[in-house]
Image (cartoon, rainbow, N blue to C red; front, side, top):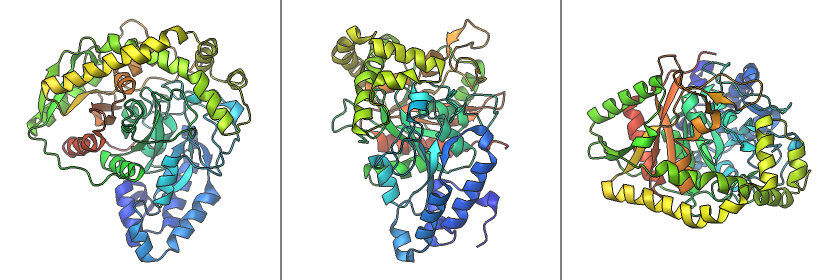
Length: 484
């Protein structure tokens, strides 16, 4: 069949794979269409590197494969983008920071390699908040620049995986990889009308779903993980299955699901966010879902005792280890920090180098984090919950701050709140406790901007969580594409 440009751009990852496997769509045509789309939308700053020659060469190799071979590849010819802090052989991995600009790793991160082995084609590297230490993706590095929300380019897309989210929302790619330390796949997914998964990390043992040691420019080995991003949850399940080796999703019926609504994460929402989220609850309840209010009044206190000390303390040793293991252009954190371009990230690295939260690290890791994990586990068990549900972010996308990258925001005219604190509040507990977290589109706000809902599950429940997300999105429906 003959594919129009619009028909190709509208394909989900799952639809694209089916068309490519069957031979109805040539990878060379599809990749050329997406590369042209990327070239036409450079003002969004979604990508730091576009691999024109490499992507087209990979597409030609795929098209030359026998039909039987194409049919066996789970990601047959699927174009993807990869966040710029994830190692990619042959393509720069700069983490959006000047000291690493032009650095090319020797090999792919394991998560990338599994996707490539399954037939995926890397279109390029996605822009991000510098060194992943922020939630706006307002990057001041000359080779990066601020990432812009495709629903309104004057607004942030969220971060730190803002470039991946924007590339997917703007139909530059159907899917990709981000990373998540405190909300960096889920926040941009919510603000751009896409879907993002933070896989289980647990305590870093067998329950860690993805293993990418020394292959991602880090913040915290306790909290960091690679995560898939796409336009719907079914596509997340496709990528997660390839990376993790998991089988088909379990069957889930909405009727009989018990979903907890944690009170602290429904408090203090922007009115337009709450309106969309409450409407989604009514739709899901009518489809058979049982919602169970849960107090969780200790959640914010316990999380606050854990998150900052772990991230800020672990960054020093973890970044140093990555620089050395990858033979990066700079070998010390001080050299890296001296060239940071974004003022908000430079301030954080001042704290990292001074190890200001080091005295609190041991208690955070060995006392407060286990208490948080036990508290969340007891909530699931006592209320017999399948998952927790709440708005991914307290507010919709806000204007890009061209001065300092992360300052303050107001919710419905209230007092100023630190931007990072405002957007991280709901996503951070899952990160701190090592839970899987999934953000999916809930609807459009009164101001015409996407709103996301987050589902958190017990550690290791990733495939069931994805199955619940698929069932939810079938009821809630898809969001309109941005007009570009």
